[in-house]
Image 1 (cartoon, each protein chain N blue to C red):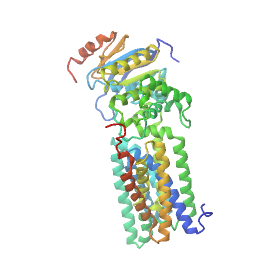
Image 2 (tube, chains in turn yellow, purple):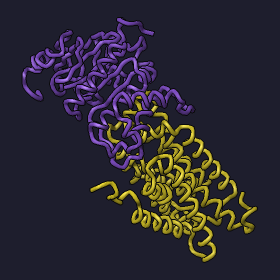
Image 3 (cartoon, one colour):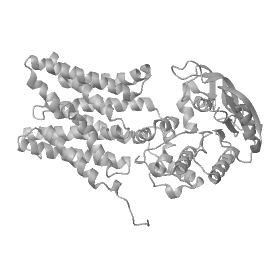
Length: 277
Length: 250
């Protein structure tokens, strides 16, 4: 897609993959962080991680298996929380532990069988050996994420503000909540191969948390978070390939460093003395 | 469309229970509330007052009985009902950093009415502006909701419900964060709304600033209606005290 700017095919693919993964994850990350349930992001990331590990072990497409596992957890979350009469956050904790255990089990077993190298891509990401179709799928989910937020902005904002008030105003809260879970499941599953299961939530949480340091409105967060994630991810891909260092870990360090700087210089912690004492 | 004087809320032998609870919170409650009535639901803590409000707007499901609001069955058309019924929740608390201004929060009251895939139009913004003028909170319109005082937040939530032009307004402890003068001010607004045909149903423990109009008292105790009559504002507190047994927090 970006060949007209970047002539080198490997670099072009890496930049495209990092750009689209960062766009979809950071847009949905704004919802995740503002809901105050970052554990949704962690759990979805690990569900995809476990699915991909199982897929790899069985010799089927790891990305497709990750998407299936992510969607399965999204489907199960609500009913299990309701049936067990526990908070969604507690159920997320249960799923998080279970999916992490499944992923570690299969990765360790593959290492025992001598397939450890391919499994390491699931942990730390691999931007070089991606199929073109995977990048197209990521581009598609990025576009769908943008359209979804644009079309349902008022419902999403109401849900983020207060779930009970949203329901009382006549919004269909449950379908919207599940739609958000599905979107997160698909976006993190497709991003798994690129940024890795252990680093995925850096893309989900940190750009939104960085944008939050400068934004007083949800709208501006939906613009600034993907802008920050996109720019740093492109820079990370170019730097990583130029210096032959792992792209995803390098970019994760860059994103986190920008967050630390943002917290330090954030205007939200400044007190104005201009209008009296 | 329900005409003046007709019942807009009809509850017939309803029971409402929370999941996993051994006994229902509301037991065999039957009431009818007419268009334009000003009703106060009183009674001791745990009597089932909030549960009754959330049963009326369909946020809680009944285990038995019939609930009809604005001629619609709550079980099958709960969301349609909630578009026409304002509900001010109790015990709200907002993160000081929540990224919404007071004006945005008032506009949220109309989101259900506007429906999916549509943006708020001029009329929506006018209703928001009118509601904020009515509550005298236009000066804080652009302020973040989380940084307002409890009383200001309370007024924003009341404005949010008024902005949706409701046929029925359910308010759960709407005076809890307000000083006496503001209670009188808000109470008079609610009294005027009732006169214009909006049905007002309030759960409250503060009876010192009621509007000068006939007040219907629905006093609850242990999930049942213990008293249901219309009286003058000055009589409300004593009647509710009698039902509560005169014991605070009983």
